Length: 249
Image (cartoon, rainbow, N blue to C red; front, side):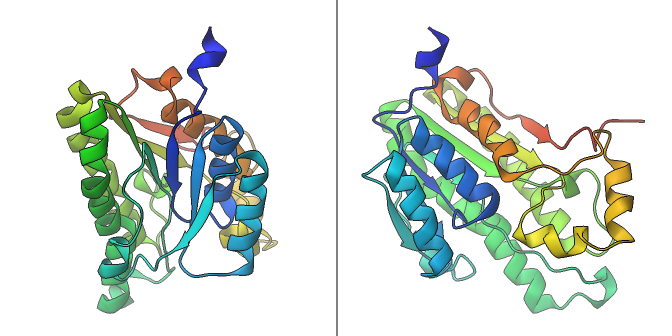
């Protein structure tokens, strides 16, 4: 039955950046369908504790970890003995490209791309041995429509998308899928202030064919599909969750 293909009981998932927003919604969806979820934040915080409490109500064996992904040594402290990795954590700064500080550029590439690569490397051996695994990255609509002041962020997400395609070809025969869930404009903590701007907000809304912003849970169903046996034949894909924002024309 189709319902059984979404069953994640017996699976362990690490969702980075899951203290709030899209990451929290994905963590809750995976827990709801039976996975033990490792909730992650850059540091111990009230939002991380709150996210863990919500997840544990659905999946009691779940737990939380803290690691600053801008520090390569801390990336290696994350659990690697997982069946599902959702690389959701990212950082972004809105700065014109010609003024972008190199230190900030290096930080964005470390968190948004290099940490993902390293987590892929560390999670791969178990997935290969058991002939089953899910590597999922959370990209950005900026891969297709870069914001003028987020060229560096867009570049990191495009690099991540290419990593997905390259790795997917090499591990598909081992029962491991690799995919890119690509959100559009989500009304999360990160975006709430700018979307509330009386001038900027309506311009963004007008550009989205659905004329509405996404909510965090709008990404959860796609993540569940990609993480489960229901999505076993999807790999190397970029799936847009953007309300039609990146449609041609």
